[in-house]
Image (cartoon, rainbow, N blue to C red; front, top):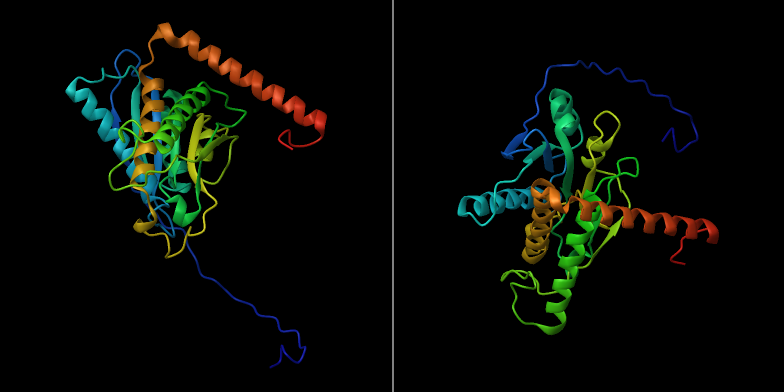
Length: 287
């Protein structure tokens, strides 16, 4: 009533707070490397935050687990050789957990060659309206991981499009029986922030990371982020994409390194040309 009458009311509060010791639970698994085991490829996903859900981020956590399971199984069967670089999988509390782990293990940042972060990667397009995005590493952290990731992404999109248009073998279209049979919709774009990959890339650690994520997100941090809004086919495709990128980084023979360098240079030249065009047009070159 006093406020409604126009009176100015001031309120003071005293908060008694203190700092106490705390812990973060971090789950770690590795596939050991061979002749370059002192270098590492990292895959990360966050297990928990204030409003955990099915896509955010049970989907990313499950996807990197599937990458680990599939690669380890292939090595055990002899379908794949052991990787040259160690592949490390990290399930962290988001942001603060990544900071704490890297501060606790500074040697990891020194060994890390590059990595992949997955945060919200399984949204069913028809229900959630989410589109998949593969974001490049920061411009200050240029790395061949960007060209490798784009090559695998292009391969996956083309395979899914051929199946959606012509049918045929679902396996070749990367279609899972309980999942959708639609084309894989997504894009490759410049860095976007908002998750653990930004911690790994900032100046204290300097690890180039590509970022898998769905956006826009209409159910994030709500009780609508439920398993029925996930797509088994999309999760399988994302796991395949992550496994391909990680394996290429970890197992690439020296003889193929010049080809990767050539692809990275071509990508850099194209992006530089696009930047010059945008500058000349005074805006977005796509306009």
